[in-house]
Amino acid sequence: VRGPGECWPWLAGTTGGGYGYIVKGGKHGKMLGAHRVAYELTVGPIPPGLCIDHLCRNRACVNPAHLEPVTMQTNLLRGETAAAANAAKTACKRGHPFDEANTGRQDGGYRECRTCRRTRDREYKRSIARDRPATD
Ligand SMILES: [Zn+2]
Ligand SMILES: [Zn+2]
Image 1 (cartoon, protein in one colour):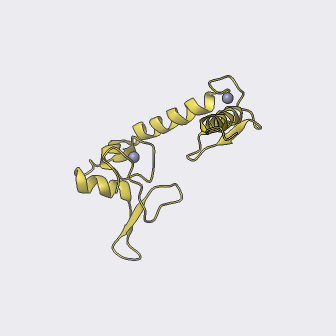
Image 2 (cartoon, rainbow, N blue to C red):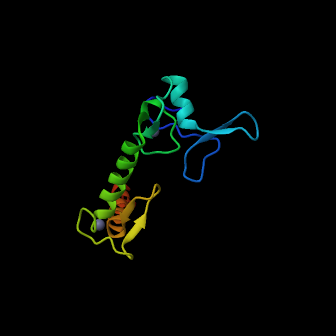
Image 3 (cartoon, rainbow, N blue to C red):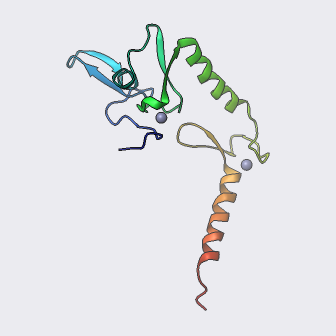
């Protein structure tokens, strides 16, 4: 059980693309997007021609507060803009290059600077050591 502001990940079947789905009408029934069903149950019918966009960009999420009916075009545009903005960056915010050796992948496909990650890990370990009371 999650709070109203959190993502509600669908725990049943998901498609290869990461969208939750349910099957209506038995084994050979129709496959429906779980987020569409969640929206229709809680908010109302989705206007014809519109698809449900995830404001949180979490495809498995079925929290109706994160779902918004948009035209297919808007949905594609939004997806491309986010991906394009991320892909266009050639260095992290500290200026380390996003080359092959320095680029890691986080959950969700976001790029992560390995140099910054190492610095963060080091600082974290140092802070733990500092907080530990001296024994000698
Ligand atoms: Zn969400
Ligand atoms: Zn960096």
